[in-house]
Amino acid sequence: QVPLEESGGGSVQPGGSLRLSCAASRFTGLTYSRRCMGWFRQAPGKEREGVAVMDGAGGARYADSVKGRFTISQDNAKNTLYLQMNSLKPEDTAMYYCAATSWVASCTVALAPFLSSRGQGTQVTVSS
Image 1 (cartoon, rainbow, N blue to C red):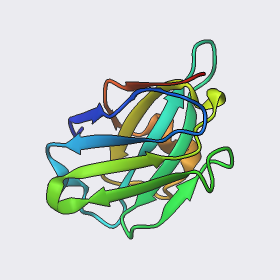
Image 2: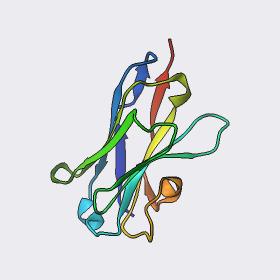
Image 3: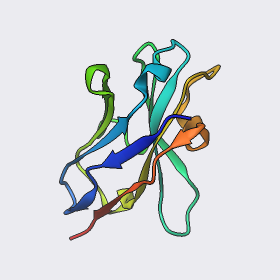
């Protein structure tokens, strides 16, 4: 497992933006081509939902609900994964978690909640 720590959550009005960060202190464990890193979220009373993932080749995949609004990216030099969230909606309100694994056969959005390492989460609240 790789220690992960999220930051950047907060409260924002509908239409606003936030950028989440995920610091991975042992990022060298995730330089393999089969690695998978991503974000999932969980709202009260709801199932965990994959939001976005990035594979070892830099390929990004998104849940349909966030396509065109969210962007996942990474900075290997800073050992950090990001989630830029634009045009936020009230239904985006949830606890957001960073997750990662060093090897996976196929890095998919649905897999994000089940990756072997995850952080403590950061709250995102969208309301007027």
